[in-house]
Length: 223
Image (cartoon, rainbow, N blue to C red):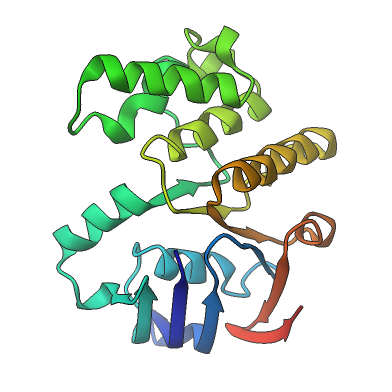
């Protein structure tokens, strides 16, 4: 699945001040590639990821996913596209504390489909991320690294064509961070999923196919 951003602008107003989070950014991400979006805090990385994934409408510009201008779609059409084609992994996991790891992984697919098949796929995904033995544990019983692996399994539940990760190792120590990147890259290699990772970690970014450095909402370097 290709992602094309054309002349993207995103402005916010905080009181009398206008903030340009993204300032005329154009980028193409080819299907099956892994891309790191790199920059310091406040550079516009997360905003860019949210615009790319259909979560936050740009002030100006167009986002095409497989040739479809997603911001010309209705909100419900765009929500269906996200649920079907995109998997999101965030820094803070966003697991539901009252549910087990297995139940958290099942969540994106519970809108439809046979529950037995959903449960089976969720169990397979927990095995893929190395947590088969922790499926009945709740988030409060999991380490940070385990929680992020559950979040990755959940993001894969609907077999997304692209995986968007916002500082996925921001709360983890270096050893656990390495294992999470190992997992993400292994999934990308196995499935052909397009992988986009927002990070400020240059070492982690160097493990991906491409690096896109941004500052003040603009691309300053592409490698």
